[in-house]
Amino acid sequence: MKRKSKIVSTVLTASMLMSALAGCGGAADASEIESEVTAKEATGSEDSQEIREQIEEEAESLGLPAMTTDDITLTYACWGLGEKGEIEARDKQLEAFMEAYPNIKVEFVNIDQAAWDDGLTTLAATNSLPDVFWVYSVTNAVANEWALDVTDYYENDPDAKEVYSSMVENERIGGRLYGMPTVMFPYLCFLNKTLFEKYNEPLPSYDWTIDDYKEIAERITHPDEFYFGTSNPNYTDYFPAQYNDGQSAYGWDGESYHFDQTWVDALNLKYNWIDNGVCEWASAEDKQRYLGDEGAWPPGFGRSAMHFDWTWTIAYFEDAVKEQSGCDFLYYPQPAGPTGAQMAVVDYGIISASTEHPREAWELQKWTSWGKEACMNRYEGYKEAGLEVVSRMPVIDNAEVWDVVKGFTDREDIQAVYDHLTNVVPSISSVAPGYNQFNDWMNENGIWDQLNNREIAPADIADELTQKANEFRDQWLASYAN
Image 1 (tube, rainbow, N blue to C red):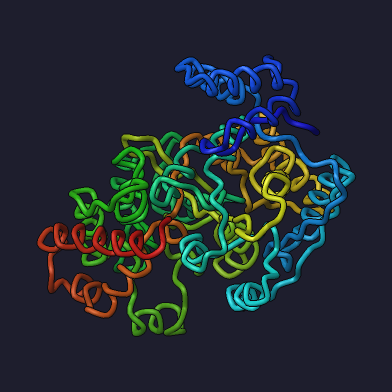
Image 2 (tube, rainbow, N blue to C red):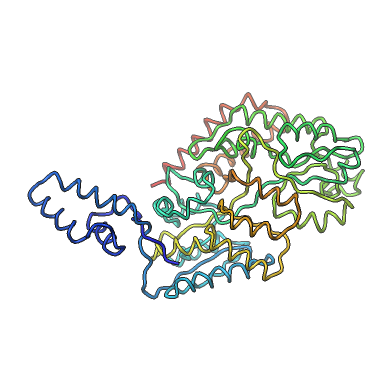
């Protein structure tokens, strides 16, 4: 499938713009305009700038540069191939790409997932990084000078407009993009239907809110019987997304961190519920007493009425947890805050800064991760493998793709989860400058321990954390951003 071309860089010379126009069949005749520009410049005419602006406007309307017709080879690496359906999905994607571009051969590069970054470091040392590859941390890839700046490709590719905008805006580093989302794993709420029935609690609507969730959690909790209203209270992750439009964990909005009242409220709710037995935070002694194992995981024994987790855990609950607990589970969208946003863990991929074929690598990345073709072929691979539970979700808002995803299940609750994924905010550990350094500082100075032990009130340290996190952001940008 060939796309119309669009000039990638705003700093291309006029002659390069003319070549692009000539190659793509631009509305203006390239040689005539270039000749006129040259003549105007020779006479010092001010009209030459107007003509160059005309050229640039013509180029802007034409899309990405044309794909090469030369025979070339690209290399590609991704992880997760040990999971059912992933090899079939990868093969479908690569076969479809090479069928669409028969002059391009794609070779897959095997990297040990358990030592992924070490493998990339080894390849980088011999200038052998794949043209397209997934990364655990975009910021680390930028710091290591592995990642190509793809801002202009993104901004000039109409297909990229389907990617959830918050995934892109929260990933910008100094205003630029160095990676693209590949797949996402949405947060959702695992409802223990058996406990709801045990305590005569009506099931909520799929359009439930944070307030509904809070009220249910406090009503249904029975810590004296070792049953809890909820578990896994990662409220500092998703409260910013649900209460502050465009923000992710730590209030990151793509430019700055904000440890504001939303963050304070998130921690206060967590601590209040732990202290009052609403949220499961059981001691080893209580686990031994009630479950016979001090290392037991209470949600896995059916002891939490509502548990927050990710789509990759559904299969485990439907298999091991149901058998172990004797409970039935429903899977609900995250309860909505004022923004209506849903949170997701997002994987990212990059194009190597050393690639000799950046335009073609961009297309390969699209066909193997975020693009419509990538999604459709991924799910064809899943069908071929007989996959029944899908955990890797598309990162684009495309009705046709989501209809295919919904076709994997006839469960009303899981389809409701999909229907609510219209405003998705990503996790930020992979993409926010200074995030890892700030967390290291928090741990080295025992800040989390002091908060968790109630030695520091969240409100008393919020301003200091905002300042410190943004200092680490500035230090990171000063060191690594171009």
